[in-house]
Amino acid sequence: MMKTNSGADLWRKAKKIIPGGSQLLSKRSEQFLPDYWPSYYRKAQGAEVWDMDNTHFLDMSIMGIGACPLGYADPDVDGAVKARINDGSMCTLNSPEEVDLAEKLIDLHPWAEQVRYARGGGEAMTVAVRIARAHTKKDIVAFCGYHGWHDWYLAANLADDKSLDGHLLPGLAPAGVPRGLTGTSIPFHYNHPGELEAITEKHERKLAAIVMEPIRDHEPTPEFIRIVRDIARKNDAVLIIDEVSSGFRLKTGGAHSLYGLNPDIAVFAKAMSNGYPMAAIIGKEETMQSAQDTFISSTYWTEGIGPVAALATIEKYERCNVPEHLVRIGNAVQSGWRHLAYEHGIELEIGGIPPLSHFSVKGENGPLVQTLYTQLMLEQGFLAGKSFYACNAHTDSHVRRYLDASTDIFGQIAAAIDSGTIGEMLKGPIAKSGFLRLT
Image 1 (cartoon, helix red, strand yellow):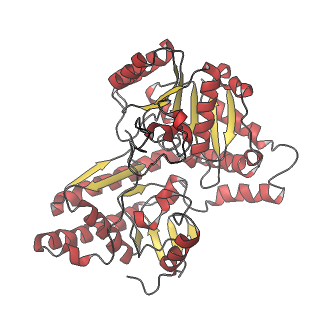
Image 2 (cartoon, helix red, strand yellow):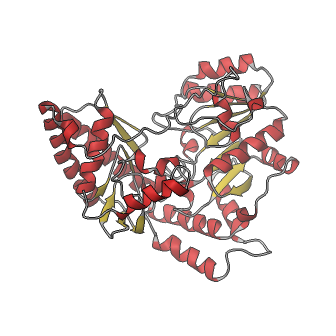
Image 3 (tube, one colour):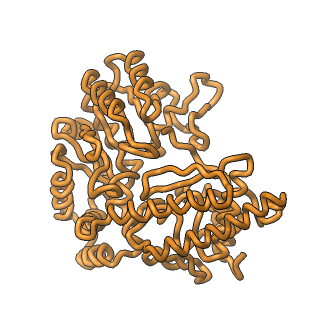
């Protein structure tokens, strides 16, 4: 596949000494191309990546799991971070930039009045749920979508039968989550308000929070928004909007404001700091002050790099109108996928907001075709799979090159399907599917 692949060798070593091989399920090599994915990078710049053997790739996949929407090693963000590093990233005193960032986030979201910080999306969502439970003095959380790895969320996967650890989402087993949390987190599907109404009827006056993403594959219906808000108000529940994935991609700030969905709390991470660990929980003063009634505190939530990176990232979003570029590039890729699917007679199901696009191949050969696509694109110098996350460094030329290569490769795949030889083209195992989102 490549002359050398030191990354694949290092991955095999990693799996012996790091449980799962990586700290993030979505970065495991088996998710992309088992035995052949380069796995590790030496350098990343813009939309380009160099692996351990200095092999060059154009990243048309997930751009650091969506954490780098400006592109890798953005000079404006990195310059601000380096200046803070030179002046010290941690101190007995506080970084003044965390006040500046709080003011900026409140300016972008006039309904919000106070801000707390974390350094990752999952832990920030846990902070938000803790605040909601402290504020309402209730326990039950109704949610839709994916919201991280913490106990409050995985509690939804605890089986009623105590002899069996069942789970609602493949890959999210609740082993280690106390069984006493059974029934405290209850899922409903996005744009299905009747399911949420059924939860509230069953758990009347016990609902602490409703947790949801503002948008995932489909826009929210006006009825869904209206009913969610009414249920939250009537049940004195905290409405928490998870903007970890959607935030800053459709507009500078939260996507919820596009739909008039003003929550009690909104949570941001990923895109707000372009690759540097940062997360923010913003909300109404009355709700956020309940953080003082419980214990929420962590040393590295006070370092200075995260706030500086977020301020520089947000400034560039506004100055360069980055969301408009992300939407345009994402739309171009989705349009290209539709064209190549029609041209080669391969059924694709295409979804996601334009900056976070994905496709799946229909039919029993779907997983094989998707894995083979990644293999053949890798040989052509692309990191590519079933998802494409747009960044500001992606150009029209990148998209043309990517779609030209994709069209050629889907042509090869279609011919192999017709001749019955597709299985012979794959050099390794079929990629494993990750967890499925509740949407």
